[in-house]
Amino acid sequence: MRVTSAAELDLQGIVRPGDHVVWGQATGEPQTLTERLVAQRSRLGPLSVFVGASFSDTLQVDRVDGLSLSGYGAIGTLAPLARSGQLQIVPCHVGQIARYIQDGRIGCDVAFVQVSPPGPDGRCSYGVIHDYTPAAVAAARTVVAEFNEQVPWTHGSASLG
Image: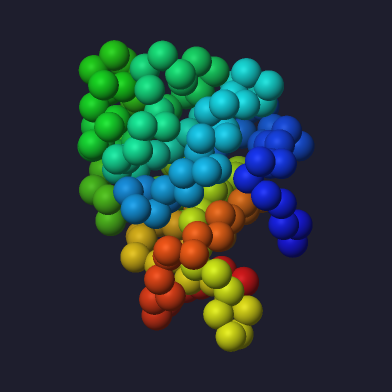
């Protein structure tokens, strides 16, 4: 495991041209990582990104060139992207996303996740977003985790460590 600060994070070599990236949704969005990906997108090559519900301003109509976006709905701040034709809708229920990742219908080469700081056992919790994140982690070639002091430790069936 390599630890780096957000300011030093260069995604070249982590994210490869043509990769499929999946990140956590809503309050589970690793916003520092997603912002870095958008800022560095021109150097990373074309990428496919699957996003769930989003309430951040990271993805904007004028800042997603080079990214092929898909998601299960035009939820929150994704609505303008859907209206502009920049978000492809995957017709499924949120409960099907993990299976779609496992089956490869939603590609996942790189998973961006937000986690709690390590607990006494050294493992990190996914916090309050424990939906398709474990499936993305299991499928990914590379997992990039953002430690967030504000993410609570929750007891779920999966953790990262």
